[in-house]
Image 1 (cartoon, rainbow, N blue to C red):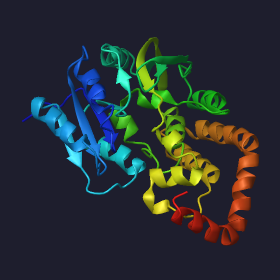
Image 2 (image 1 turned 90 degrees about the horizontal axis):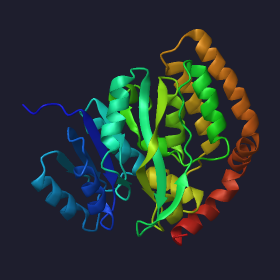
Image 3 (image 1 turned 60 degrees about the vertical axis):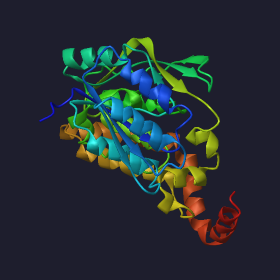
Image 4 (image 1 turned 90 degrees about the vertical axis):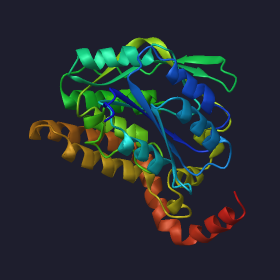
Length: 309
């Protein structure tokens, strides 16, 4: 029987032929070698399948699964988590790169600090040619001891938008599987990170070991209209009314209720959401206005979708 790996790397992919080989090589070049790479192919129509099968044939640590149709990014992110068997888990995009020491340093942190549930390195943003664009300030080093303190600090960090690169950090698998996993809606990674603050501390490794690629075909750039991004997460939501900010709020409420914390900690987290409502009242109001206007807007939306807009 095959031994359980310490680390599972989950890679959801769709038509990733351009950068996929470089991403896989960056993992196979890691100094820490006790890992598996779980790839879930969402019905790619390019050379993704051939590339993955070639790598899997050469290295038994690579496990390749293919869906015959694209079930959406949200489903695919959760599929690789479902298939993971390692003690620690890391999501990986097919277009990003990792320094050879990334896994080793992240594992060392989690091994040494049981109170830490997520370890991640500093991030450098690169372009389609692998050239550095910027050194990104993630600042998610949430070493505060109490859940409501971490949750409050997290909300302040993401209030005005954030790259949320720590979602690609190394996470304790059992903790991650206790959450809602990745939602099939925009910025679900932001909500998931918020939920994870309720379970333990985040640790930022003070070295630039993660290279996040920014290029014209990233989900945000390729799907500029918000309704297109919703369908990217879940094709079944195409053309449907979706109140994203209210979805975030409801998911935060459910996350706090589900978290393994005391009643007093839960109440303090709920109080923090009052601030969240104040910060987001304009967007929440727009969502309600959209809901009221939906019977009028819906025919025009279907017309646009039919034209491929």
